[in-house]
Image (tube, rainbow, N blue to C red; front, side):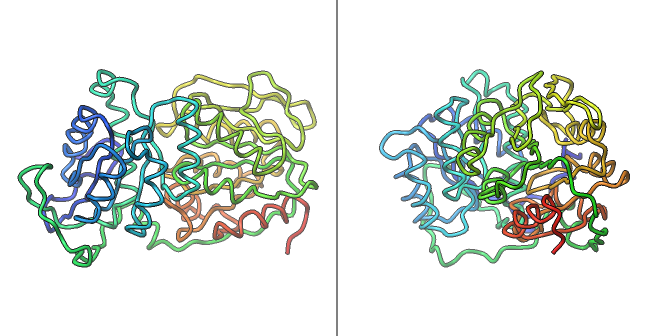
Length: 394
């Protein structure tokens, strides 16, 4: 049977392979709930379950893993302290931060992303919520598969999580090609580029998801003052996290940046971030004053905020020819439909390339659909935006 949001499970066992996971959380109850949720999928196997960062380091010495789901607040050694040590102990390790939705934890999670974590996931605030949180469970499984699908290893038949046979870290099975079907299609597709637009854009729009915060920091760092266009960002994030993201971006870019507010006039030179759990759109007409609106309309592409409604509104407010769209790393295909409309009406789209993306879902979708005028490595996207936004075509 095909699973929601996926193409169906691969056969378990050595042939299909599994993603090996370590859970690090000071609550044994939470670890147990995580384990049951993850191992309901035959492609996932929890091979270690420990209560703090120091125990995680010791466990990693005994047995390499593919993914660590790392809590932030723990005794002995917290998640932010453990993160660089885990990455040093096993370079290339995929770490997903897990935390409850507090302002402090959101800030720590973003700092963890800058320090090498691949992604984050907000935990339900109680075990009763977690037990019934199907959306959380699905999101965690999808994140793990998207980030670690190609790393699957033969399933290890072991009697329990408390008794593990020590293994040689150098005796790790060679990774098998297990890229999800959607990503295999991207890899085999030919990317055809469109001509670069001759229009100087009036607005910049950016969509991103998994790996997006790190990418946004790099793309928008040191934007020159002569870039006066407003910048609209939809990053798939929950509330509180988007507040902290906007604050971090303001420090990185040295320009005004905040979550969009309903009814707020659009001002040149500002960066507007879609707040968690709201679609951010722009109302107005070409040549007229623009205002931001926040909508609680249904999620699109399983997301709220979503990129597509933002792009549709910008077409109405500015005219597609005046929009420069950038699609950065992320799962899924959010932004594809909106980008199609932008391009059909004369606007321009650029995307992050596959090697520099944490997940080449969103940028891969627009790139392989033939919508892009450029598909660039992450370090080249910021300079390209600066050229296009100031009228340079070098």
